[in-house]
Amino acid sequence: APEFTKHHHQHADAHTQDGATKRGSGSIPDLTIALGVLTVSDRASSGVYKDESGPAILAEMQAHSARTGEWAVVLARQQVVPDDREEIRSSLDEWSSGDAGVCQLILTTGGTGLAPRDVTPEATRDVLDKLWPGITEAILFKTMDAEPMAMLSRAVAGIRGKTLIVNLPGRPKAVRENLAVLMPLLRHAILQVQGN
Image 1 (spheres, rainbow, N blue to C red):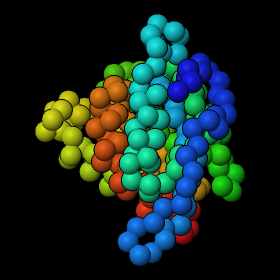
Image 2 (image 1 turned 180 degrees about the vertical axis):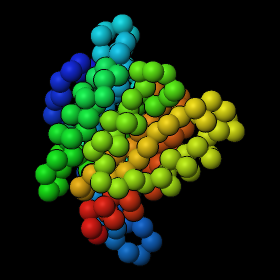
Image 3 (image 1 turned 60 degrees about the vertical axis):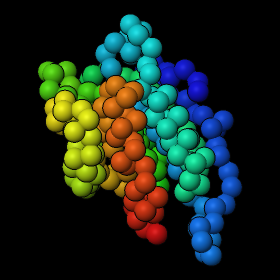
C-alpha cells in the first residue's frame, strides 16, 4: 500500500479488485466500494511515527473482499491529519459532499478516546445527517471481552448524504477487531444508503 499522505490526499486506483460474484443460484450485483481512510493522529501527521492503522484498514478490506467476493474496494481517498476538529471535519465534508460523494464509505482511525485532544467523534457528528448507533454498540459488545479498554471509545457512525462514515480506534489490532464486526454488514448497509 502507498504511504499515507500528510495533510493532503491522493487518488489511488491501484487497489481495484474486479469480478462479479455469485452466491447460490442467484447472481449478486457487483458492488465496488469507493473507500476513504482518514487517520487522525498528532504524532503520525507530524512524522513522529509511521501510520500503521490506515494501511491496516485497507489490508483488512482487501482481504475480506478477496475472501468473500461480497464487494470490491477502491481506495478513493487517504489522508493523515492531526487531532484537530476542523481539519477532520473538512476532510469528511469534502469526501462526502455532492449527490454521490467521492467516497461511499469513510473509515476514520484514531481520536476516539477520552483524552482532551480526542475529537474525532465530535468532528464526525458535525457532518452526519443520521446516526447509526447500532454498529458502534455491536462493535463494543463483540470486542470488550477481549479488550476491556474498548469501553473507553466514544466512536460514532452514521450517514452523510450517500456516504457511510464509521469511527475506528487508533491501534491496528483494535482496527482489525472492529472491522471483523463491521465488514460482514457493509454490503447491505452501503446498498441501503445508496437507495438499493
